[in-house]
Length: 268
Image (cartoon, rainbow, N blue to C red):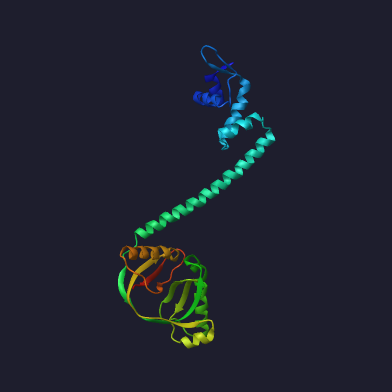
């Protein structure tokens, strides 16, 4: 017979845990001294203790482990359980990694927002351009379409033998049907571009007497953060938005950065 200390040492657990397992009926001493209440175990009980610890490491609760121990699991059953648990743990790791990516992205965006400059109040000139328009469900869909819209506009300009004479322009107007997205170019010969592609139309934005502007510099993927920061600043100042917002692309970059875009939000 083994004392509780010896059995705990051989099983790789503490005496306190052995007492806990005894209280739950999971690993009961082979004998208990009537007078001293000292617990004694047999070597033949070690496999049960080790199976308990293995099941615990697999993530099973002590309430789940009791019935499993009493069934005297076969090697094949243990292998099946291990494989099932492996798949669950792997899925949990992948889900955790996905959450970690989202958390880090949210932290980065919040840090970017903190670094945003204050907006300025100014007037906006009237704009005349050739345009393509598309209604999307929301701002999250803009990036799926706007690049292709500019490609079509530039192809029409090439066929017409004309070139843009200013920065690219985008406007956004929220409505009941979704978000109306306009991709626009100012060109020297609008009629030639319209003739080159009948899906292209002429567009115009009126002069705006009062608007908030903010420069976005860096990655185009982060432009939503700049819009959010501008919106938060305007809300804090109690200013009311009015009309479609504009983006003026002063400098084009790539996925790693280099963009310089002026955000323009007309105010009431």
